[in-house]
Image (cartoon, rainbow, N blue to C red; front, side, top):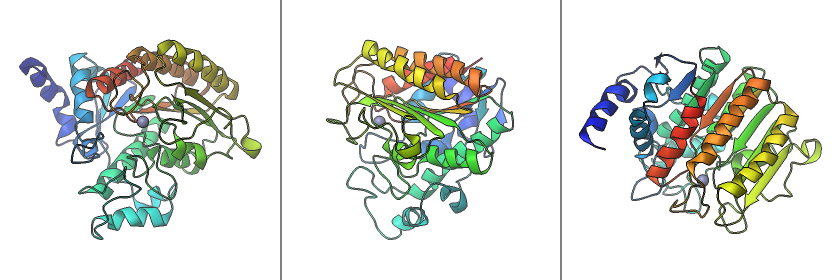
Length: 341
Ligand SMILES: [Zn+2]
């Protein structure tokens, strides 16, 4: 970042990063950007790919592109309460994370998700911020939101997995249903990894419509998301998994996307959730697709249209994965641009 960019960065996002009251909003527009210092605390130490600098890398680029002033800046919320977390998670999992530091637990899973200082609060802030944003959308205070630090799609109801402690998307789905009476929800996931934590939690739920494009699980974590997985029982046919071969680029992605879009259109969702992980871009250090940021721009534009046609415009996007800082900044800026008025 050069000095001029840095000065503008500090000026434009200073209120986001320090001093803004939890959940407070400022600025214009119908698109909310949920970001701030408290959300940057969700990150691991010791060179882990999911470090605490990812939000800053995105915000610096968003400032450079002039996007920040066009959004409603929404400060992170207080940590989600235990009652909110257990809308999706088991009490055992929530309690384990709460005592992990005190008990000296080093890992929450088999070696992907280490315990870090402040892990419970930081993880609960990701969820609390997403739940707060749902409330703003349902109250008509904004129409669309983007939360770069969020979309932790590998955590299951019972446990952490794949860098994901609590599954903010799962809690948002339960909150939409329990608090706001919204049933038919679409979840679109273009992170390079299959969104297994969401998929298997709702595999038998016919009202959770899923489209998930990812690198083929035969050679990529978490090893799932095969084309034959379409939902079970009454939910058969409400999910579509579109694995891409190693090295696939925009052409293959857009072909898969056209199938995903037709699937979503058929199910006319009342609310749209979008996990726009940037780890499918060429050069990501832990995956092997070769997308460009145009893929993210295209999907965000098309989902905005889908939401306008069926969901009264209501759409929430979450950053998900992405470990090359330039890639995540570029991909997420394309998503935010597509969502801005
Ligand atoms: Zn990922």
